[in-house]
Amino acid sequence: MAEIMHGRKALSSNPLKSSAPLGASLAYLGMAGSVPLLHGSQGCTSFALTLAVRHFKEAIPMQTTAMDEIATILGGPSNLEEALLNLTKRMKPSFIGIASTALVETRGEDIVGALKLIVAARPELQGVKIVYASAPDYDGAMEDGWSKATAAIVEALVEPAEGAAAASPFVNLLPGVNQTPADIEELVELIESFGLGVVVLPDISGSLDGVVPDAYTATTFGGTTVQQVAGMSRALHTIAIGEHMRRPAEILRDRFGVAGTLFPTLTGLEPNDRLISLLIALSGRPAPARLRRQRSQLVDAMLDGHFHFGGRRVAIAADPDQLYGLSMVFGGMGAEIVTAVSSTSQSPLLARVPAAQVVVGDLSDFEDLAAAAGAELLVTNSHGRQAAERLGLPHLRVGFPIFDRLGTAHRRLVGYRGTRDFIFDVANIVLANLPHHHPEDFARIPGEEAHDGHAVAATH
Image 1 (spheres, rainbow, N blue to C red):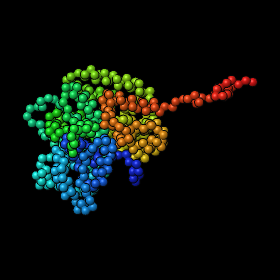
Image 2 (cartoon, rainbow, N blue to C red; image 1 turned 180 degrees about the horizontal axis):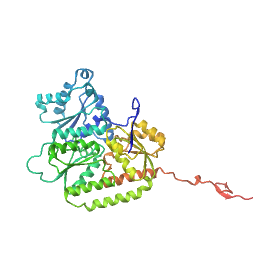
Image 3 (cartoon, one colour; image 1 turned 90 degrees about the vertical axis):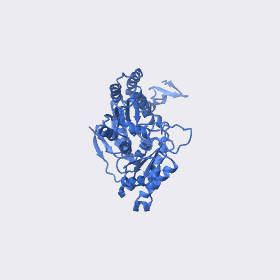
C-alpha cells in the first residue's frame, strides 16, 4: 500500500492539475446540442477554453457569464440570466450546462435558488434543458468536475422507468474524463458485439472526435441526446470507468434501481477479462471470436514487450484514476514505479498504486523526485516536456492537455487493442532511446596503431 504524501509548498510553481470547471465543461460537451457555461469571470473561461482547444484542436462552444468587479461584489444572478437569454436566442441549444467557478463559490452565492427563479420567470428558457453543477476550482481537479457534471445531468434529466421494458436491452456506459473519443468508440463497439445497445454519458466520441460537419453549428456536434439520458433508468446495467464515476453510478442505482459495476481502469488484461465476463453474463452470449483473437494478440504483445518494461524505472504524474491505471499496467509488465505524483488526494485508489509513496504535488515535485530516483521514463501530459528536456529523459505523453502531438482524440488506451497499442508505444520509446555502439566506441586492439585511417599491426 502506497503512502500518501502531501506537499508543503505555499504555491504550485509548475501545476499538474487542470481545474474542476474545465472537467465539468468537457462533460457537458458530451451532450448533443450543448453549450457549457462557466459562471465566473472571463479569465476563468478563457484559460479553460485555451487548454481545451489546444488539446482537441476543435472549436469549443464554451461560454461565460463574464462577472466583473461590480457583479462580484453585488452578486451575479443578473449576469447568469443575461447569459442564458443570449445563448438561447443566438445559439439555440437544446442543453446548457452551467458550472460554477471559485469566484462565485467564494462569494457564497445561492446559484441553485437564483437559477430556479430565472427559469420560472423567463418563458424563453422553457424549451432548453439547463443543468447546474457546483465545481469550484479549489475543490479537486478535472476528474472531480467531470464527475459532478455527470451526476448533475443524471439527477436532473433521468426519468423513472414506467410501463413496459425497453424494446431492446441496453446498458449505460459512464466513461471517465481520461477516456478519449477513440476509447469510447472502442467500448461501444465492444458492448454492441454482444447484441446490447448502449447509452454513453457523457459521449464526447461524437462531439470531439475531429469530424468536420457539413454545416456550421454553434453548439456541440454529436453527443448524447436529452431523450437518451431520460431513458437511462430502463437499462439492464451501468458500467462506470474510474473511481470518480462512482457517484453517477450510485445515483442510477439508488434512485432508479439500475445495478452497476465500476471498473477502476480498463487498460490491462485482467480488467478487460472482467468486462468481457460481465457482458457475457448480461447478454447470455459467448464472446465473439474476434475478441478472443484480440486477447491473444495482447498476450503476445505482453510477451514481446516485457523485455523493454522489466526493471525499467518509471515516473508518472497524472490525476488519481489515471495514475492508478497506468501504474498497474507498468507494474504488471515488470517496471518499477519510482515516482508517482497525483494532482489531488481525492481518490481511494491512490493507496493501491504500486509505489512506495504517492506525492500530491505539481510538476516541479515530479521533476525533482524523478531526478532523485533515477527515473528512466517520464509519463505525464505535455507540460512535462521541459522536465524531460532538462533531465534528458524520454517522455510519454498521457492525460490532459496534450497539445504538442496530433491524433490524441484517436488514441486508444482501453480494451485489448488499446492495451496492446499502449505496450507497443512504451516499448518503442524505450527502443528508440537505447544506446547504440559505433565502431569508434571500441578500444583498439593492443599492439595495433593507426596508419592512414587503418589499423595496422605494429612491428618491432
